[in-house]
Amino acid sequence: MKVLLVNGSPREKGNTATALGEIVAQLQKNGIDTETLWIGNKPVRGCIACGRCKASGAGRCVFDDDICNRISERFADADALIVGSPVYYGQPNGALLSVIQRAFFSNGDAIAGKPAAAVAVCRRGGATASFEALNLPFQMMNMPIVTSQYWNIVYGREPGQAALDAEGMQTMRALANNMAFLLKATGGVPAPGRGAEPWTPMHFIR
Image (cartoon, rainbow, N blue to C red; front, side):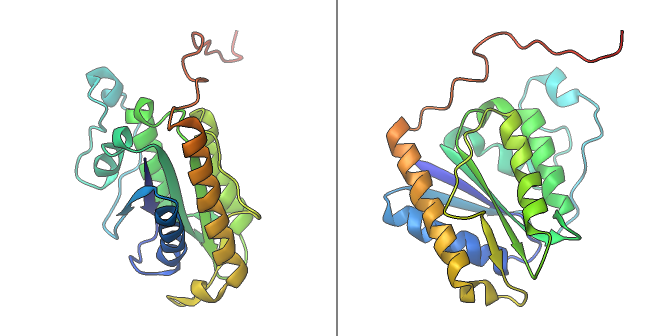
């Protein structure tokens, strides 16, 4: 089985990478394969609600000039997803949010129902708000959220300082152990919530 990790920091080898690296090492000790994709530091588009991804049925965002489709095309081969982000103004990296929104909307069926986890990395504050924001899309996609011994938060400012957060690193290892346990217990079979019955979309305008 395989876990896809997304490094949502513009710094390829920053503290988000350190946190995800701890998870990777522990997953591999549990016999779980991993692949880590870096969001990069080039411009990322936001969704413009054009609907062309749905109309085409291709499972790809119509904008193909950034990292979005490179990430979403890995969904089918992944049994689980872990997304990590630095905290900016009490929120996840905006570029990462744009990518997740577009990837889930255009190719969500390929990742729906698979276990997921979020990791927030900050200097001092805003981590819990960012952590909650990252988890919201998972809940809409019927993705079981994998927990740890604490919220999945790591502290550090300068690159590499996250490794000095002993509790944070332990939390990352516990998260990896729980992810491995869930994948092995379920055999990598996605949760059945999505599609179990016809969707009944509605709004409150009459």
